[in-house]
Length: 256
Image (cartoon, rainbow, N blue to C red; front, top):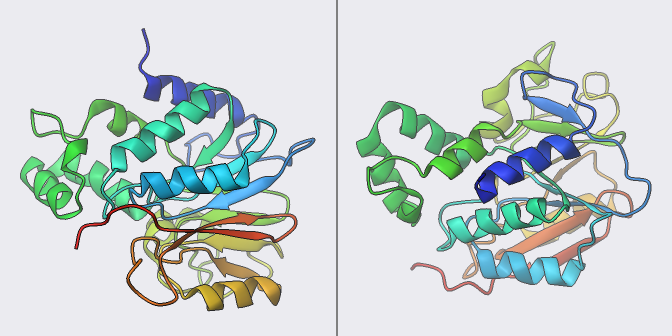
């Protein structure tokens, strides 16, 4: 019998009905016939906050939910966040998770150095993702390894960190997509579409201003784990079509 994560991967493949890239780096996701297109980023193990935000959004099966990386680490409940995403996929929801730098770090350490893997996981309050043999949980490993680096829709690119738009083809630079901390908009290379990303914690007022002004680049990372810092500490959900922003204050008990 397949595990929940394996069934989630199968469901993700079903959701991705029109792949552009057979190497699993990117996919085009058509607009749903009905339902909303929602984007969340940088959950960082804040399970209770994530569930509360889903309740506020009232997610339906005809909606599309893009989760654009860094689902894990820093918050206390990384596995529960992943398991919730697997549950949604397993139950037939149109969820589209992406790879962030934290997911990639776990993959890298798991293949290169088990000692570094456990040390990194412990520092990130995510040692529960490591099995008794010192390796990354096999379900988690398979799931992370199947995550694309970006999605494209008719109106937006969805990516964890951004793109190096100085390159002739920014869609080949996978490391930049999960690590770049700033980039400029290039109308031609980005096809005139919005870029929705996370990765760099940004003041809530600045995010709201970007949305209100119709900015082409929108950073949705309000630093959910920074609940003790003014202007930060919310998990955000952005509607691609209406540009509505729904915010949920962090309710997880975070490590000091």
